[in-house]
Length: 209
Length: 291
Figure 1 (tube, rainbow over the protein chains, first blue to last red):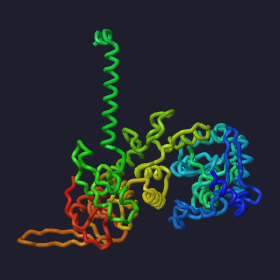
Figure 2: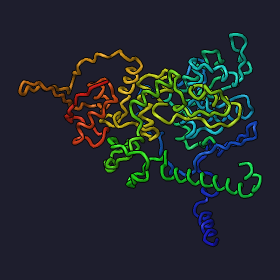
Figure 3: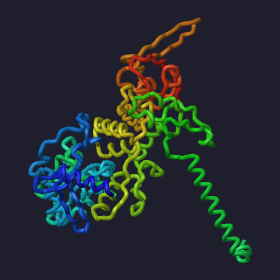
């Protein structure tokens, strides 16, 4: 106890910054973001505070074979807005928290299980492909309404899609699939950085339960 | 029977408890002894007697889990039972069965069986979709992630992925230790020989298409004809080329990757395990009588 107190004193004397301020903030004004979902679940997004921390995972690889792991252009498809991390956080606050939008992880379940952006739902790109005979069920779950042969997307959710990062074509594919059934372009957003940049910036990753 | 029950209910209850207890103990012991799913830990010489009842395979293969993406050679001396490695043939058969939907039991897709129709179990897209619907509607579900090479290949083929994608997928999964790769499908560079696996699939799905196998030719093939006392004997040799796996060589000579074990047996002196073929090795290719 005494020693602990001594440590506090030492910190207070020698490292005031470490005690009174968070070293690794998201922006100068923002140290962390807390988002409460409509379900009552609370998500906290912050960065890893260890300034010596390095990635030690799949995401340190530089040279995956292309094809298939090729570099994506900034835009996933014409008219689709591309987001960076700050915009992802705003989306979580304004669309996800209000229930207007969904954050979709387009990767296959085994990747999703390893860790994803908090609040993300796993909708593998393959399930949105036109070859999936059960795709209509997903479109309905996303809020689209089927009238005869055509779809009505006025009540459909705003979607922010991501996958493993700029070398991953799964979310662009998912976006193109959604566009081909008529999902409105202004309801689709693309987070190109994906897990690669999210993790590289030390942002909170959640293991789905 | 009824009289015993009616006369002495406590004793019959005790007897039932005893039987249940004994059965539980037996199953637990059996599971501990057999450990059906666990890979043999490296470095521990697993006792053969513990594996019990069946005969232990001659073990021409080394458990791929122990050699996957690891360059050290100390592990290959172990000879775990053969069953740990899925054979090339099994993989092909499983993939085809799953694709055509003719698999009797859903061995390839351990799908969540809770709310779905029985057909779900055989259709990866069905189970994927169910998982998506469940998570979109907020009900947690356990997703059936593909865990074997067959499942990965089936899934990728169903998605209409290119050969290059499947190759990258398998190699990524193999290097992460997520799937078991038969030794015969490892190239001398340590990669998964996806080309041979896929070619084998094509061949199996078109039976009879290649009944007349052309004589193997190309780089590394060497045929020696020896005439001795009026008898003519033909010997085939093959010098391992870059990118070859034992499965690929078997396909080249026999048209069937699954026959790699014949080559492996004939070259036991220079091959420590089926995934240890090296560029420049000269393998003797035995004649195989098919059918």
